[in-house]
Length: 230
Image 1: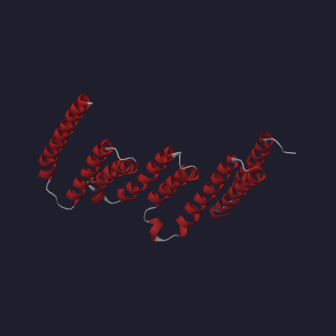
Image 2 (image 1 turned 180 degrees about the vertical axis):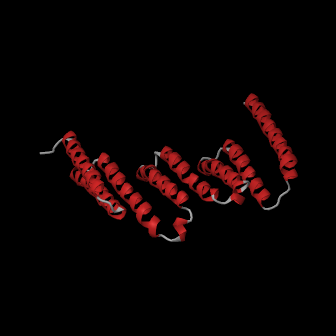
Image 3 (image 1 turned 45 degrees about the vertical axis):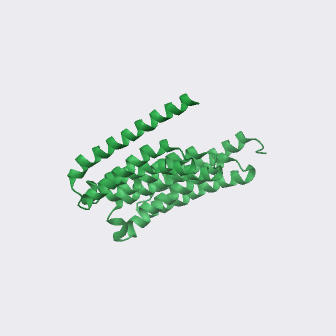
């Protein structure tokens, strides 16, 4: 019984469908929002338990995904309905930030977990990094004083950081060009936030950029001469 993957998937799908329908019906007859939220939390944990049972039978990847989704939804409902209502000023002051931040974390975790399981699949770090990098922007968004310079500084830093990490793992100077430019821009925005004159940004930066461009042209010409000599 239940020897094939298709049989197990059909059985779990049926159980999950019944559980989700039962949650919907029970909440329809409940007037108390707290009771409704706990019914939803318990129901999603039962959904996760159904996938856990399937995973324990044959250790299949699709069941792990179901476990994670069930637990993540249950935790998200608990976070929004219970901590959000009773968490005090820490959450209530910025609920519009913490809720999407938690959602981004929950979406990013599977990508990060996939990379942890198989380090050769580094491409999964890209969506995880992008999702997590958005969170500080949301946190700084409530501070009007940070929006003018700190947010652009962070964005430049967040985009440039992967290039520098890539250079440390695979030393190719080409990675330093976009990484260095972006980090320089981040430092300039940070300086402007702390009183650096805008004249330095409008005059100093172009001059530095021209010097960097001349250096790159010189390197390119030298490389051509080296290739001709070879």
